[in-house]
Image (cartoon, rainbow, N blue to C red; front, top):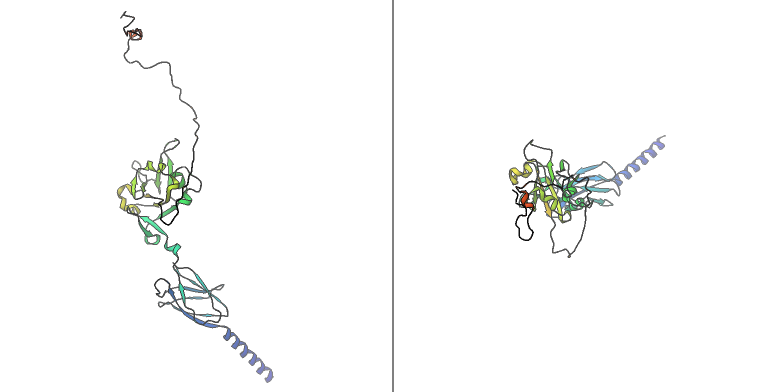
Length: 287
């Protein structure tokens, strides 16, 4: 019996030593590539599990892993990175900034100042050129329809090129002006200009909602503003010529019934209708 117990203890010790040999602790430091400074709060997780940790204020971390685990390093504003542990015990990671997230900007102000979307304290929406021209629209107003929440575009008349009324978040006044301000390349323009802008010439349209977003444009922008940025040439791009054409056909539903037989009285007399075509003298002098 004692021999069997000794054999069991030996097997347990061997199994425990094998388990401890497979698991090990990995330490390291996470820094930013741009300035080399440590990054606190970086999420470090073993892929496929819920086991993980975060870096401290000095960018250092420590985590227990098994053989050939994969560590996933995630941090806001940086590209996610995965590293295989293999036989390593110290792994220093350098994270690269995510240019896509850093490039998320919004045009704000009459001077076209660009700021990151997370830095502003009001609601904005940007519609790019691809979304504006996705359905081959004939004017910019049609391109914005259904693209921005809270943006209402209504036609004022039924012509081929009808005027439009643009409101943001509903009407604010019963008798006052509820139209949003149109700003073209930093210059406020009348609302009628929207239909004369070629959608293919527009780079993007930024919609500023609320009076706080449009404070730089005065009381005219109290209903919000549409900032239109047109395309510009670049020295790095090759010259390119594009041509687009569109036409519209409208069928007239009916013509008004207008009389063409009689005209209005203008003070003429009967004698004025009987004159010699050569001399101009009246032929009838009975009056």
